[in-house]
Amino acid sequence: MRDCGDCTACCEGWVEDRIEIGSKVIEMRPGKPCEHCTGEGCAIYEERPTDPCRVFNCAWLLNEADFPDEMRPDRCGAILLVDRPWKTWDVVQAMPVGPEIPIDTLESLRRFTQEKNIPLVFYERETIDGRFTGGGRQRAYGSAEFASAVKNHVTASDMVRF
Image (cartoon, rainbow, N blue to C red; front, side):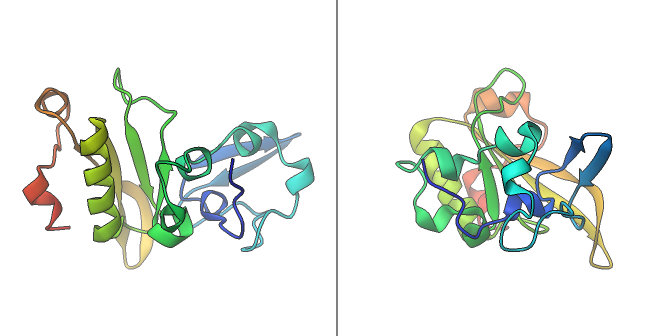
């Protein structure tokens, strides 16, 4: 398995979470990173909590064969998750590192999931005056069967408009 190197995207709040360390609670969300994130790593790495820190693994860490080096979250602009089903579907989820996933990354993910016949669920974050609101929308790409289960399904021709 790979290691994170100097990528701290998950600690920067792009994967919203709530961490309990003893009686202390740390809430992370876009625009509000973990207070222990130094920008180069974790200040409490050796003592970090099990959940979510030790158990969280992005797909880039776990799937070296599927996701090349340029798909590391801080390089491609998306945190990829493959171990979290969407409803009853096994999917690839992509969380933006910022307001939205860059178009070239989204297109690479669309091609990858199409080749593997796996649906892609991705997110766009809402900002007002440069601040994240906590809102946004979930979008998806996949088979016709998957499309019927998803409100905001995207076709291949729609992907180029991002």
